[in-house]
Amino acid sequence: MSPKARLKKFFDTASRSKLMVYACVLGLIALALMSWSLFDQGWIPVMAAMSLGQGIGTLSFMLFIAIVIMDLRKAEFRPSIPPAPEEPRDD
Amino acid sequence: MTYYLVRRPRLDLAGMSLMLIGLGVLPIMVALIGNMEGLDATERQGFCGSCHTMDMWIEDANDPDSASLAAIHSRTHKFGGKSCYVCHKDYGMFGYALTKLGGMGHVYKFLSEWMWYDRDEIIEKIHIARPFKNENCMQCHSTTGAIWSGVQDHHGLVDDLRNGETSCVSAGCHGYAHPFSKPEEETPSADEVHTALDAPAPEGT
Image (cartoon, rainbow over all chains, first blue to last red; front, side):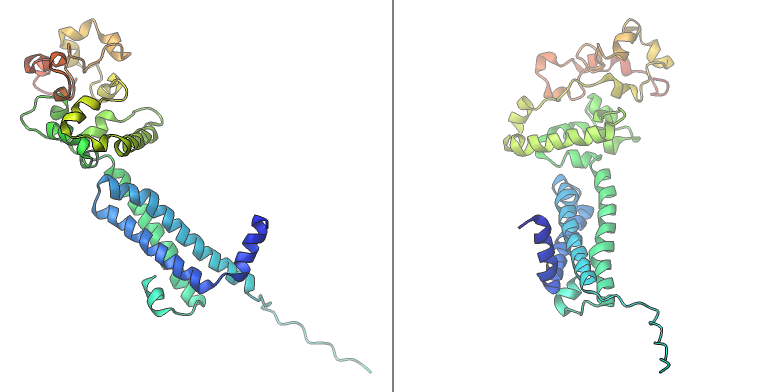
């Protein structure tokens, strides 16, 4: 299966709520790592925040974007102007 | 995010907007503030001293009785808190990035080798990666001021000092910045180290 087809399958079949749970868990880990460096500025917290923390945070945000894309793929876009009523026929 | 994990609200427009704040806006803001604070923290003496390998260098720099160049410069309030960074950073066009890259090299060396050394071994094993550039001294000591020019020893060496052929921090001149880390025979005596720094004020150097 090509990467494009895999991606399509993922967007068609993945569970939104499960993805959101993963995004939330990763987001909380990222926030914890990034906040740690604000209080303890030794080399481990600072480097963990600026590499691992931001990487995990980006992954969490990407999962959120994936959920938005899934929503948009399934959304029904209705025109805001209703179609004109049919002309009465002259029989 | 915690709210979602605990209460599992519906992912409608309101829910998604709330999650956008939690997963997008908030982490991005924390990351930006963290980057600014983190990069600033990497310039502070405490950051350089957070590895045990640097303990002796930091102790000497902060020793009020020490006459080493590092200690004298660390006592300068202008950059005392950032004395390691101010003296060792690269002042070139891409200096900031290159200095940070050099720092990453230090992290690699620490994790792969230095962290296993104790204090006695550190003194023998650690040395500066490249010879210290006079350019770094010349960021403050321009070599054009009256006091600097008034020092007899500087007269014949102006060109050599400016192009880096003679080091300001060599044993015959101002001595090593961290003399405790050098073998005894290479270390000048305390009298030799700062004969040129007897001038009353640092202005015009």
